[in-house]
Image (cartoon, rainbow, N blue to C red):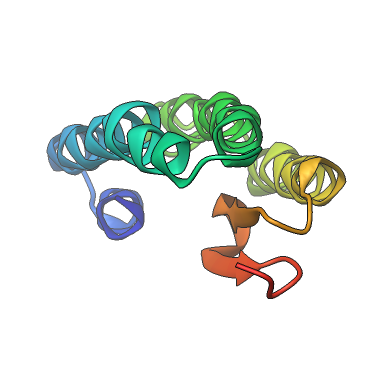
Length: 125
């Protein structure tokens, strides 16, 4: 998904939209996994895992929907400057990290999408 966006940004002409579409296919696959398969796995674990996972997955989906929209206007149509493109992406990264850490409990894991890493919050899983 990220690689497709990078290739699209580096490509000249209408081929960039092919890369964007390919990236969106991966994006939709990840959104489906967050909402369906991984959610079921979290509920099976029991306890607060399902509720915490639902909140974190919902936050991740909301923040991630900003990325393709910003890409369309910044890289796709060229309407935004680089500064304007980076600013909302950085703010969404910080916002998601803060929300992720505030929602986490000792028995929960947190997936911070903006940092592309999986962290065990308290290592008690």
